[in-house]
Image (cartoon, rainbow, N blue to C red; front, side, top):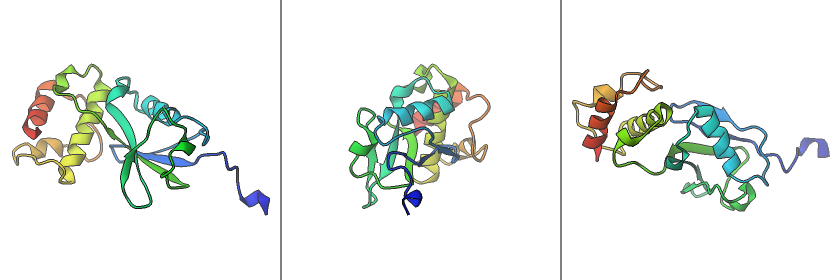
Length: 156
């Protein structure tokens, strides 16, 4: 029955992105550094300003943890799986969103703020809610810095 066990070194997992899509992880081994997963996600999203983002996961007690990119996947002792489920998100917020250089980075910040408002983690004035609900699952075609800055400042 060894044929049904699979390769113990293979790592099967998914990343839930902020636009609610799933990214299936490929070519990852348990001995790989967690940075390999982050690299795959950043490449998929075309995000270059990587210092603001991370991957969270839940342990068997439903406590969330940030994936440490310097550790191997097998060193994350509380990681539950397979399948391994990670949640992409903003780990460090910038004080001024206009300082973000890249459109994909601004898009991910926008999606994080919108998700947090929808789930009740951030309070949002009623007059700004319609601006966050313009499209169901994606970024506005081009995020206007003034509008994003207005929403962002109001939520602080």
